[in-house]
Length: 401
Image 1 (cartoon, helix red, strand yellow):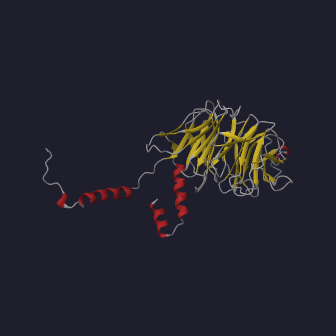
Image 2 (spheres, helix red, strand yellow):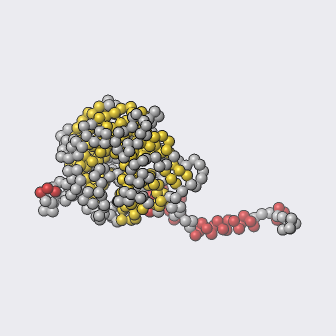
Image 3 (spheres, rainbow, N blue to C red):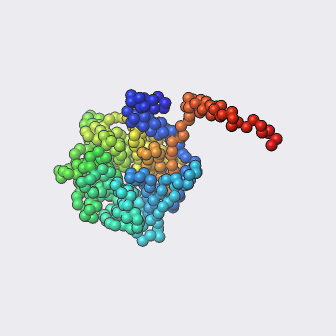
């Protein structure tokens, strides 16, 4: 650490190098924090969580009981031990609450005054955070598995929606209507994800074992379909041609720079793809347990070197090195299956939600002081004592006084 600080001070290293090194160290030291709790509000499993990007302060959660909760993650108590309080709740007593399980919640990327939720009650609701009332309700013919707003879009306000219908729906926030349909899949859409690099690029994952990448400006169909065999027909059976997995594909996640796309499937595999070419990078992550019949919410770190992937795996969270596939560690703390996890890039923290109705906070362990720092502090204390002017020293008091 001192070497990085010296190099930055001398101008030898870019300041970003120090930041990445410290972020990486913090991620590698993640552990369950015994001093931080999150209010337990949900009476059933937690399916989805999202941390807003504006302040990095508020977190949304959606549960299998249909309840939506907003938490304040800041600690204003000035105490080491504290609880992240629930600021407000759309509970069972609210007339606007989802009737069935909430599958996805997401903050509006530019303002905490709005968020979007979707549910198995066949609706997607756009909420006013101030009043906790829906400003808009989109209704669909089947259960809604997933929705996503582009984190960078300035030219459009489209929400991509995946339902039991093989067609992907594009809903416009401005007009409040469904304006476009993307056709190509043959089974229900389990996950949808906009690229964080290009606001017109969308990835979709389906129960038909396929992942398609779309340019929503084009009306002619998808740009390409991901192929786990990279076009080598000798390795693929006739049924497995142009498939990303040998089972249902239920998880999608772009890396922070949008250059790579991660997918998970019920074949217990996770794959890393070049998002520009659709090429399978063939990184071997080993067996990644995945028994979920619905969308699996996993996440990737940001600002580290190398980057890490956090994947729910039973009652644990598996942490993998992104480009090597190495299993770095397993985070254990839940009493039942983990359904979702969200990385906080500002503090390198991880929040996980599971069927045990708990949200757990995983935070970096405090850095141990360097040997040089300890010796410096000891020398400083000794110097402070010896530097006292003799004229001000108490030489006449006795211990008996």
